[in-house]
Image (cartoon, rainbow, N blue to C red):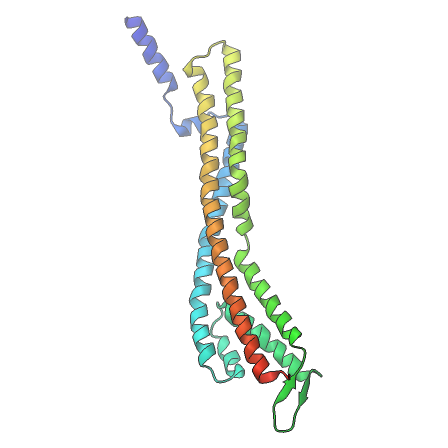
Length: 242
């Protein structure tokens, strides 16, 4: 009875180890997999916090610019005041459209009519300028989000590779020792499960953040398109000939 109890204690002491011990005792292949996953997770969290700050700044800056835009008396006045809103994506789109209007007014696309201001033609040029400015803003807002998507889709499979490698190590130990006890297979199984867990820890926040930020970027794109449409209507009424 005492011999059985001693053997049980020996086995228990042999299989009691922490997650850190399992990582340190893991094969170099599994350690490399874990290092890759931890690195991907760290980059993802850096992108998450940076992107949150960027989107918050843009949304906070757009509202006062819109208020100023609709209360201003002229496009020249808006242009001069738009420099006070450096973080506003709407202000940057407006400036692109305004500069295009100025180019058109200074080119042969403008003709002066007696008793009236310049009448412009070639509104397609203004539409293209606004579309290009919107594309640039959307690209800025969505930059590096593809890394979140890549992490969300690949991290579980990278962790699965570490899992398979750890299980292979456990079977190798069984073959080398001719013993299938828990003390023999536990380290390999443990490092395998840790690889799976860290893969999920890296992938889940990345996927959630990607979906969340893409929704916010699409919302910003809709706001930019709506502003561009209003801007075009104002330009058509005041500057373009029928």
